[in-house]
Image (cartoon, rainbow, N blue to C red; front, side, top):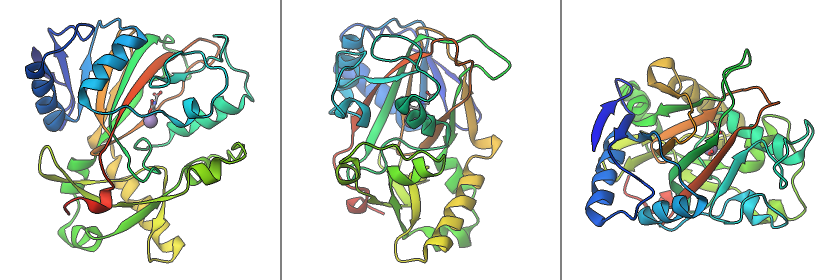
Length: 294
Ligand code: OGA
Ligand code: MN
C-alpha cells in the first residue's frame, strides 16, 4: 500500500490495494492504523458491487441499517446494510424537487457526524461512488470533511477546560428542523428519540481528544437551551474553519472511509438534473459515548 497525505492535518489517499477481494487480518489491521492516524482514507478506482462493499465494511464492525432502509417499503438497493446516498428513487429515476426523501437527505449538507442521535452511534462511514455528476455552476457534489481532533487541539486551554465534561443532546428532528424539514413519518419520533453524547471524546485508536459535534447536536444537557445552542454554534464555526477542512472531489470508483468519531462531513450542492449515486456502509460502535473514558 502506498500513502499520500491529502491535507496538512489529516486525510490520506491509499493506493495499491483492491478492496473487492477478501482482505486478510493483516490488511484490516494496517487499514485501522491508517484510519486512526488520518481519519479519512481515499481509495480510487474501486468498482465494488453492493455485496462487496458490505463484505469489506463488515471486516471493521457490525453494520448499521440506516433510517431510510429501516423505513421499509420498496428500495432501489437490495441490501439493507447499504445506504442509498443518491438523488434517485426506487425505480432509479431522479427524485422530484418536492420528494420527501430528497428533502430529508438535504440535511446531509449541514456539517454533521452520522447517526449521533442514536444511543450507540456509528464509527466508520464508507462511501462508494457509482455515478457522479460533472462539475457545474452549482458545484460538483463534493463531500467535505473536517478534522475534529485538530479543531479540539486548537481551542484555548480555558475553553478545553470549560467543555471537557459537557454532554450534548443529539436529535435528528433538530438537524432537520434547521432546514425546515418536518415531514417525518408517523412513529419516527418514537423510533428515534434524542440521545446524549459526550461533547469531548477520547479517540481510542489515537488517544487524542476530539470534539464530537454534529448538526444533530441540539443543546447542552443541564444548560438553558439557548446558551447551549450558542456554544455549539460557536464550536461548529471554529471546527469547520478552512484550515481544518478537506474537500473530496468524487470520481466514479472512489471509496472514501471516514471515522465519524473524530471528523464531521457535509455534502455540497450539484446539478440535480444529473444522477449522483453513492452507496454507504457504516459500522456501529459498541457502546454509548457516555460510558467511554473521558
Ligand atoms: C453521508 C453524507 C454527504 C454527501 O453519506 O453520510 O453525509 O456528499 N454524504 O453525499
Ligand atoms: Mn453523513
